[in-house]
Length: 173
Image 1: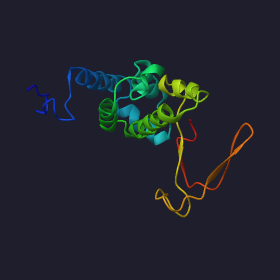
Image 2: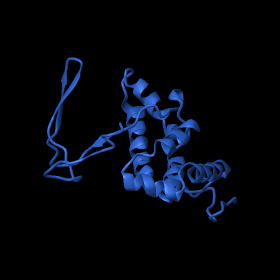
Image 3: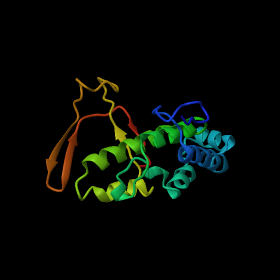
Image 4: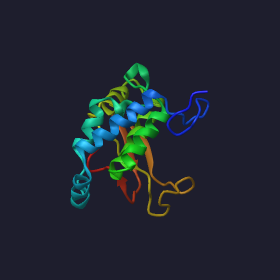
């Protein structure tokens, strides 16, 4: 049987075919060109989001990985893993942000109303960003039994009540 550069056979779920290996190499070059280590340090020290590194993968449809094909998505979770591995090897803050991005796309891709589909397309094309509000003062990220924040449907949207300790990407989403 065929095997990849890591010796994994095609029956292995982590097998990296030619297209996935090409994606990995493309991302590695892109990250090195757009956000080399000195830029990463500069942005981290300034606590600034790397908009250039967000825009570059969006331009090559990386942000659409895992999204519904009928909305412009492509690839699957294994392609998302490649993205995460390459980002985690350098600009780790962008890797953390990509987790949120892929979560938002997965949730909206599975459950969005027709009106929310526009947001989904904007996320996949890099025109919008995801924010995630989970932690609460009494529960941190262990929210299964202690979530107190509630959303109540009202005319024109939702009314949210509760408290959050932190909201990831709130300043940029």
